[in-house]
Amino acid sequence: MPEAFHTGNTTLNLREILVRGRKLGFEERAKFFSDWLANMKSHRIDGLLQRVIVSRMDRAVRVRDHHGNEQDMLMFGSNSYLGISVHPHVIERVLEAVNRYGVGMGGPPLLNGYSELHRKLEFRLAAYEGTEDAVIYGSGYSANVGLISAIATKKDVVIHDVSCHASFMDGLGLGGHASLTFRHNDMEELEAHLEATHDIEGDRFVSVEGVYSMEGDMAPLDQIVPLCKKYNAILVVDDAHGTGAAGPGGSGSAQQFGVHGDVDIILGSFSKSFSVSGGFVACSKAVADHLRMFSRAYVFSSSIPPMSVAAVHAVLDLLETEPEIHAHLLENISFLVDGLRKIGFDASDATAVFPLPVPPTMNIRLAAHAFHNRGIFLNDVEYPAVPLSGQIFRISLMATHTKDDISQLLSAIKEVWDEFASPAGDGLATPEPAPAAVQPE
Ligand SMILES: Cc1ncc(COP(=O)(O)O)c(C=O)c1O
Image 1: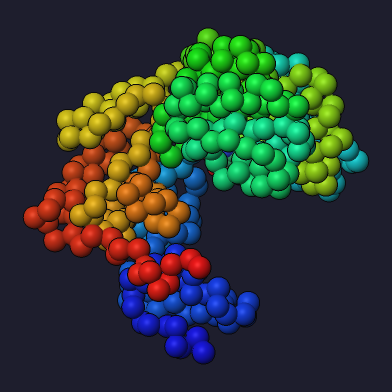
Image 2: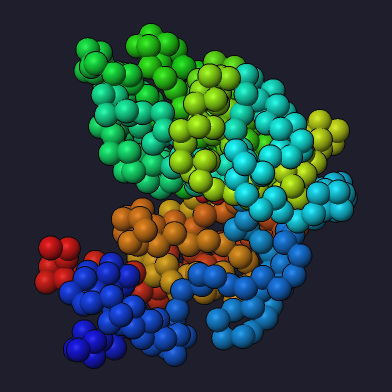
């Protein structure tokens, strides 16, 4: 039966695969997808997901592609904004922690998984965010899932920006809470929702991101904090991409907008500026106590290992003792913004994340290979993860990139755009969405 669905059409897109696959049983569906992937690979037009890094995770990396070829590449796809994963102080503190505590805790924080290093980090994160306490989770994803599902009840309404991250949406789905969405950074629509819900029985939670991971812009917290105070709503800010990168000296998005200590609940991730993995929620002592008992992603999941905790401590040390690291990130941002503007892009210096919108004439898959072949590691964000009109290449800058690295990136962007974006170029547009026959039923 799978053959009947397997058209051999190498441009078949993922959405089409998912829709067709729904008609099959699980094992057939898995095989159907796996065959399709192999077919793409044999035509050498597979995507560039899960390229294998075979070197240190630095501003330049060695990468093995799906065909076993290795090449040196400049890394513009990592969210390690401070470029700190190979910093000697970080490595030293991690090694100390391994020697002192071993490699892992072997249990959740409520039982055996809570070291003095974990507790000290909670205090430090709370001080960083201007809150009373903080709670460490296994990842930013589980912090989001564990937070919203634990704090909101069926009587409450969660009002959120349409661009909030998938992990927040999953938390919302898990709790089955009533929610309202406002257009990205549209303060009028947010206020309209707050007005419209003034008489609900429960609480209103407003969820936004400090730095939006795909748009690369920031939530105007200087407007959102007063709005939440005016309407007595509880503000939750996911600052996964702002922690350590936004704000003066990497002090976070709340500091950038002068509202440090005024955000009710701030969530962060250790997988971006801190270069490891894990997440946290900074909040009042009462909310922290509540999460430690009622947030299932916290209660039923093992602690992050002391070495990750030590790495986060080390990065917090460096933000204090080596301010030039963050200053260099800011210099790199200005340099890239100037360069992008010179070659015709509309770039903002708000954050270290730069989306390059993919024009309708460009085949994003071919363009992605062109970047790869030029030794530039970029992430392409493809349909159906985003709508066809929203496809982007996403640049993440690191403090450790050199001006020469950024100049090479700019030259590659210009070449790829000249070849694939111009109506006169030979770039084939990305395949249209599947015909109606295979649209979701
Ligand atoms: C805004 C936002 N929140 C949460 C997460 C999840 O963080 P983590 O990678 O630590 O699970 C991400 C990561 O992609 C993110 O971009």
